[in-house]
Length: 292
Image (tube, rainbow, N blue to C red):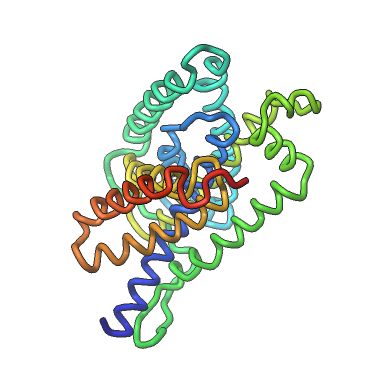
């Protein structure tokens, strides 16, 4: 393997890992606090990309990315709260709530995908790149947009970690994640923590969608594949472990990039599932399961 090929694989792996880390971190937060999976998470990625496109593109409101990106993030934060209020909150206290929420969020995802198809039309959309051009590293051309994704994602995740560890709201979230009943006894308003979790999760998904929308076309089903990868990452890293999710995302990204190079694009998901099965056999709790 030549040096330029190795650099290309690593860049591809880190870009994919960065996007998976953003997606999976939101899923991990929801699972850690509510012990439920949000199957509409992929549609939040899609809606974030469409919202940024609509606010910024000349065929939409033509306000530019400087307005489109913040507007999309704010809109998706509100959308995450609305999703929780409509599809999750009514069923939390019911028996079998985790299964019911899977069904309701799957239904919500289907509805939102069809609504996007009707609202934005069948034609593919694409966001302008935040930064254009490329640089050459070891005789390999790397797009500045890809470099931005690789650099920006750790910063966002670091800010998320600081929020969870240094702020009152973040500590309340961690308290609910560690022990729901003890958090209630300590005076934490769990009813306000849950929608906040969905808002943060939606913002992370939307940011991944905006980054992805600058690299590939925006479609109503663009969130399906990243959602599958995010589930693999969450289980691989350890359910409820945010550090494990982040580490797992980059490991999965690198493994996928190597698999695409060795066995091809269509066989790469098979390789990921084989790796996941092996990890589950050797370490059922995932890479960092049990850690908070």
